[in-house]
Length: 204
Image (cartoon, rainbow, N blue to C red; front, top):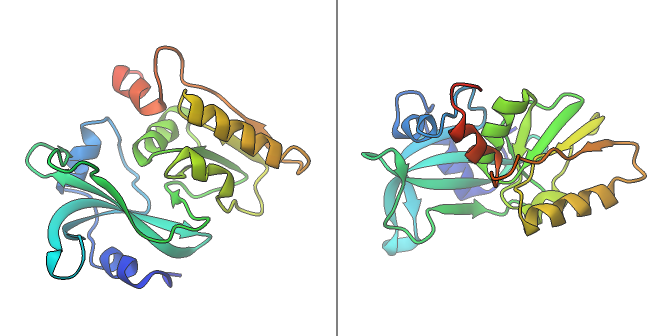
């Protein structure tokens, strides 16, 4: 099901598979490998509105609430360097209203991990070998719509104040639900799972 935010859906449907694009180079530079579920590349992603809009290359992530696309997350890229666009103060931007959605990078089974950013979620999925969704911010994590058949939730947040707060909020929300909740943290001195993966590429 693709019904959702009109502008976001149009960008998503105009986007291409990642293989062979600057988005693949960007992810590969961070040791992030396929599968890239719900990620695409668009060489002409709108930035701005109306006549002020410009079109730039970006990694596009579908934000879904259940199966419904409600928004997209754009990571604008420098296509030559294989990095985030350095000329933008904030190269990561949402289009649409994410509601209770997340970037569903892995198909949930009875086990699901939650991480904050897309890169961190991909790294955590590679390291922990479980499906992981990106909540696009610690402050959104407790509001994400979880699958009804879920039995075990693995919280893979950043090792910082926002991550600890999100961990507490989710544990409180599910303390009487029967859902098993686990909270592995990236080992010191690493702040997140993407940082850990970058430091141990041959071991993952």
